[in-house]
Length: 345
Image 1 (cartoon, rainbow, N blue to C red):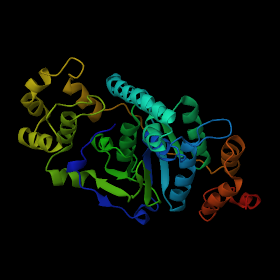
Image 2: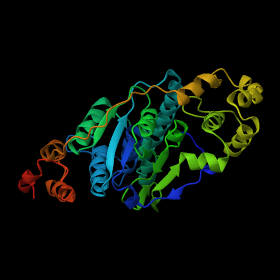
Image 3: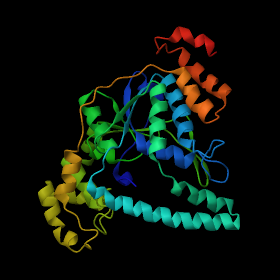
Image 4: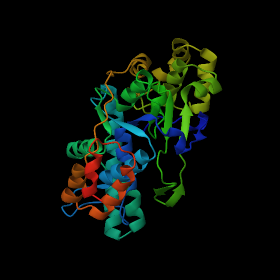
C-alpha cells in the first residue's frame, strides 16, 4: 500500500535526459507489481505464454529497461529480503483485499462483465519464487545489477543511494524518502501513457529531492518519520484516526522531537484497538536504522543469447521484436563482446 503523503509533497516533472549517465536504485518488488497490474490483456488477465505461465513482469522488465538503458541510465534492482515482523499487519490486510477482489472477479466472469473483470483482476496478482528468480535472471542478462537486500528493498535502496553515490531511488511509493533516500523518482518510464481501469492517462516522470522537501515543509528527517507514523505506514497501516497528512505536519512542527510528538498523541494511541495499537519507537527505528548491507555495485555484461533464451525459447516472445529492441543497445558498446552482435542483427 505504501505511505500516503501525496498532499504535502511537491513534485517536479523530470526530463529523462537529465538522468543520462546516472545510476538509479530501483525498488524491484514495487516495479514488478506495477508491471503485473498494468500489463494486461483486454479482459484484464495478465500476459501468459502457451503453457499458462504469467509473463507480464518479464515484458515490463524487458521493454522498459531496454528503453531506459538506451537513454544512458544505469540501473540497480534491489529485491526485498526478510520483512520485519510488524509488516505482517499489512500482509494480512492485503490478503483480505485480495480475497474480496477474487470473489468480485469470479462474479464478473460469471456475468461476462469485462469492465469489472479488468477492475478486479489486477488486485489478484502475486509474485512467487519462480517469477522472482526468473526476473533476476533476465535483469542480469540485460546488464542490470541485481541486489538481494537482507530486509526491506526500499530501505536498502535508500541506504545505497546515500552510501554509494547513487543518484536516487525509483519507486512509486513515498516510503523511500522516509528511509532517507536523497532523491525519489516516480513514474520512470519512456512512455507518456499509463493504462488504468478507465483507460489511458498521461504520465510524466517526477522527481522529489529529500533536502528540498524537508526545507519546504520546514522539518527534519526525524519529523518526517514521525509524520509518516502518524498517518500510517506498512508497519502501522491505520496510523491514528482523524490525523491526516496536513494535521500530522502541523503536529510535528509544533512538538519538534519524536518524544514530544508522540507524547502529544499518547491518549489517541492508547485508545486504538489491540490490533491497531503500535509502539512508535520500534517503528521509528525501522525507518531510522533499517537492516541494510554495504553491497558493491557491479554491472554484468549484457548476454544477448540468454535474453533470447528466456523470452523467446521459454516464453514464446516474438524473436523479431526482441531483436528490434536489442538494436537500441548496440550503439552503447556496453558489452566487451560487442563484436559478436553481428549474428543477432
